[in-house]
Image 1 (cartoon, each protein chain N blue to C red):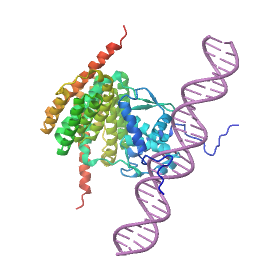
Image 2 (tube, rainbow over the protein chains, first blue to last red):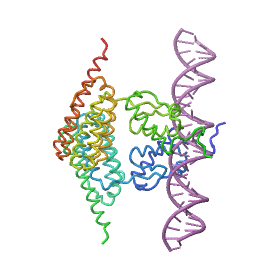
Image 3 (tube, chains in turn purple, blue, yellow, green):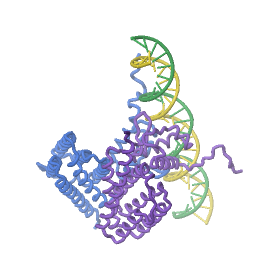
Image 4 (cartoon, protein in one colour):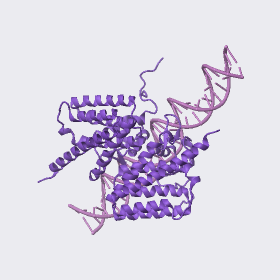
Length: 235
Length: 235
DNA sequence: CTTCAGAATTTTGTCGACAAATAAAATGCA
DNA sequence: TGCATTTTATTTGTCGACAAAATTCTGAAG
């Protein structure tokens, strides 16, 4: 006799609890579903994910290592703040990683890498066509991470991924109200130019295009922040 | 009546268990006391640190996030291997971070930063004078991290610190038998030149000196590896 | 009404225990 | 003897519980 209607069927495979909590929380932090500074308490999360506090704590330790939450000793854990006062450090590192990873991709990418990059670009173009800003942000990240991975330098890839994630939070704040649908969209065209330069293994061109791409994104974010700040100032 | 001779006096403050285990294990991994690939099992560590497995596990999760251990699901955790096949990626990132952080230090360092840098340099010079290779490796790291911190870009600082830690493992493998005491030692002089360039806020000079410093270290490591490989080949 | 001290409540850090999964040992069969 | 299979043992992943630290609440005094 097979018991199918247990009171609490395990439902989860052993060892998947931490990964589940980590991935869900990570997405919610990057989508700003969990706002910066908001406290995340362990018992609530444990109830929500229907698991003990132990795997929740391990997921939080992981998130702390990624800089997505801040844990105060003997106090609650809070979602990491976005470091607005030092945003230029973020822009500086982001621009450098755009350039370095695209250059390395031109040097070291394989055919299989190029296929992956093209696939990411296709998915990204779809999200742009749909006008789905959240998907655009996430897919743009995937596209550039794919390029970075083809550059074969895990140190750069990891930092770049972290920067793009942080950018996902910032864009989520400012990008939404400012999207104007166009066909073909400039971002898609820029990506295609980068792909062509990588395929041609033209390192100098990759550097120029990556820098231009980064500068455009940075200046766009800065403009949005400036506009937003103006609105915030009471008269 | 004050009970002083409890059977098991707490000895440790609440919340310090994870930090203790993390720091000790981290040092042992970087000093190669724990060899790459060697398994680290939780119960042994729990007995050794006289604590439960829970804080040990959290420390291991942290170490995994720093890339110092690799956890296989449902299997034992092992000390991370040194990625010899792709060592040039390490050298490339290390050189870039040397340059970038030294440049930024020239731009953004304060007087307090300079004092800290000078203090690190003094400690480093002492370790060189003593011929203490382990201390040299660790103090050299501290010196460059101090410079990076004065550059005010935490993204660069974190990556650089991670690279310097990884370099600590590599140097620990090869550096020991090859140290020749000199006074004044070239490394100390190079550091002093870098300090002067930072103080003068000469960005271009900082870039050149940092690149030269990095190139020297890289070529030295490569020479050591090449020599070692020759010895390893059986005839 | 404000302020400060003490009590009560909440939340975290740690512990011991149990079950699943893997590794190791032992047994059976050809 | 060698190989496959079952059994045992070890190790990890998760759980519930307890104690310490911190926050909140309460109440009394100024």
